Structures are given as structure tokens and as C-alpha cells.
Picture 1 (tube, rainbow, N blue to C red):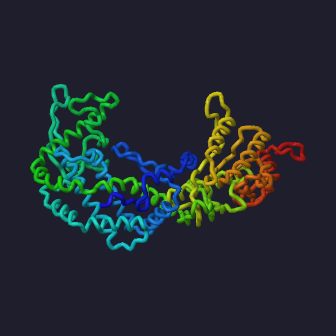
Picture 2 (cartoon, one colour):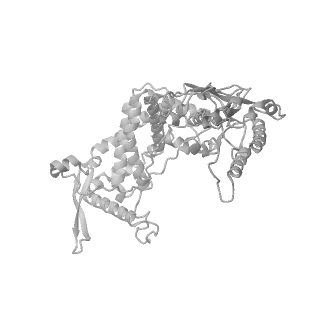
Length: 553
């Protein structure tokens, strides 16, 4: 099995290239609530390293296209998706055992090695049966198919399967052990040993079984609760190896788990000593078989399955998720048709979800978005940011259609809820954060600003905002600034006439459906806003308008 086969990166994609094409800043992941969308269940309690969503963002159009094509096949072909879902538990087992073995083989680790080889054969067979006759289109699955076929048809693999089939013990069928424990006069464990090795797993039983008494006839029903045994702990890692001192940072429960696991393993090795000794030459001969390829693939499969689940869940709920067209960074393209906010869609707060278009071009790369309070401005801002972020994971986007260029950084500057530190006000904290962003910002980045400068007076906010927008235009970044400072929409000529301007500033407006009654449409259009009606609308809605009758409201 070729260990260089990747489901997420094209052939020959080096570690250095991955690092070079990482997004510069990851704060947007929290700001846009992306972890609630693509949920990768971590299993650190099993000793499996955490898979971080931030590890998968890229700025490389080639990588994004590679992933989108593979994702499209998984979404369109249920048998391919089922293949990965069936293989994942076995690959997880290989990963677990590889971690505990540290890549070396000794006779006391023989059981683990044998199970790795058994799982390796099972996974390879699953992949071969699903891929051998499949008409594949994505480069990623074609590479996997070629590697699997080369492995499956090799003499080495055939000999391995033949030797595995000659085992006197089917270790893959071992599911549980029964332990007998003798107690001393103080009811403390005095000695223990294995009573039996079983081909069924223990379970806690059911309420109906306990009531009817049926569980009494089931030897695999536990009298007590089943407690999980954390994976990845060994006596060596806990400082319990011969000649070592106990690690003072380890809890007693962690030490107990490691000691019990090692004791059971030694007992199994003792019981199956003859089978292990007979199988030893096969293990030593084939342990070099490249099972590490599946270990490398493990986090990639988990990420892909999380993407598929997210997309299918959205579609099952009635929302469109589409495969975007990938453009080069130099094209500086953002063209979204009927984009929507994922979190709003999933919350079902709005009965009819409003869809909006968004496009950048030579006449507008950075936009000032104004409009009435609760008019959908912040919702729209986050919808655009989420679409861009998902795109740079190589994922489908919440829009009916999209053409996007990667950006090298996605920066968010949302109004702070409170002061970030003792002795500093909200406005000072906001400015400090924005300065850090602007010093990093380039013409290949996206900046999303939501009600920035709302922590100071209108006069100060307007002055600072004008300076910042002029600077963003000179830098050439794309993005959106949601603001209550309506006067900014009148100053496009000033911003765009700046001598060093590299990206035009333009207006977006949240429109009203019925101005007289304050009914919002939640439509965002590329038009000059009518700011005069917004203050009257807010005052009337709050009952602060002084009427002709000489009263409020």
C-alpha cells in the first residue's frame, strides 16, 4: 500500500507546500461558528490525537479542486461512502495498535501485530471490493484504487492472506474475557486470572430484561455498569516500567487502567503462546507491510465523513449545498448566487429563509453595508464569510451557485461585547485588535467587520472608519463592513480617489419591504442606501417618536 496516497492532497504534495498554503489566521473559525457545522468527533480518551478543523484549511486552488471532486463522488455514490464508513473502525484499530507499538515488533507485542495484519487485510479487501469495478472520476479515488489494486494483486499480499488463513486461532473473533478475582479478608483484590476468552462482548442489559428476568439467562449481561477503558496508556507512558518512578502527574485511575490492560495482554499471550510462536515467522516477515498508509489516512477519512454528514444534513433539512467553481487567487473572484446563513437556517428561526447574491468586481472589492437594525446585515456578513471558509476546506457551500478564488487570510473584526482586559474600554480593545489585523492584511485577504467602532461617539467612529476604509482600499483586500455610520455610504468618491487605491469601495444596503410600517425584507442589494428613514423607523419601533399629538409613540 502506497503510504503517499492522500485523499486530500494531489500526488507529490510536500509538507513544506502544505505549510506554505495554510491560511494565516484562524480566529475566524470561532467567529463564524464553523466547528458546529463540520463536527469531527475527537477520541482523545482512546489515545487518538485530536483532529483539528484548522489543519485542513488551504489557499491552494489545486487542493480545493482535488477535494471537491472526491467529495462529489462520495455524495453521489452511496456505496463509496459506505466503503469508508465500514473501513473506519478497522483503521481506527490499526491506528490504536500502531500507537502502542511505536512501530516496533517484539514477541510480547505479537498479539497486537497479528491484529494489525488481520485488520490490514480486512480494510484492503473492503477497499478492493468497492473500488475494483467502480467508474471513478476524482483523482483522489483513482489514486487510492490504483494503490489498492497494486497491493491486492501483489504476491506479497497474496502470501500474507494465505498465511493469515492458516492461523490456528482467529484473533479477530476475540471480543471479551472473563476475569476471576479472589478477595482477601478485607474484601480487597488478592489475585486474579482469566476464566475464559469469549467471542461475544459484555453489555449492561436492558430495563425490560431486568424486569422480566430474561437477563438472568444471558451470561454476558453485567451486574454493574461498564466503565470505559481509556486507550493509549501503557505502563511505560505512565512511568511504571521496570526501574522507573511513578509519574506524579498521573491519576490512580489512569494507572489502574494501564496495569489492568497490561495484565490482560500478558494473560492472553500466555494462553495463546503456542499459536503466537507458530505464527511468529509470518509476523516478522510481514510486519514491514505498509499498514502505516492507513494510519496516515485515518484523520483524512474522519474529516471527509464529517463534511459529507454536514452537507447531507443540510440537504435533508431542505437547504441547498452546491459545489463551487474554483478560480485562481489572481482572479480575485467572489460570485455567490442565493447565499444563506447556515446557523440561521439550522435554527429554523425564520420560516422562509431569505437568499441573497454577492459579487466582487473591478467596481467594488470592499463594501460598506448599511441599513435598519435587525435588517439582516450581520446575518449576511456571516453567510459570505462562511461560504468562503467552507470553500477553503474543499467543501460545498450554502448557495445555489458560486465561483470563488481562495484568499490567503480570512480576518474577522466583530464588535466586542465588553472590555477585553482590566483598565481598558471596549473601544480601545476593538482598535487594538483592528490594528493587528490591518498590519497583516494584504490584497489577497478577506476582512469582515461587524459594527466596528460602535463603542465610541458617532463623530470619532466616523473619522476612524474613514481612515480605515481608505487604507483597506489602498491595501486591496476584499470584504464587508457592516456599520451604523450611514454617512460613510456618501463618501465613495473620496475613498476611491485616493492615489494608492487598489480596490474600489462600494455600497450594499439592507432593504425595507414596507418603510411606513418598518417591515424588513432582509434583502441585501448593491445600491446606495436611503439612510434617512432608518432613524425614524427605530424611534417609532421603540416608541420614542414625538407625535403631533404632543406625546411619545
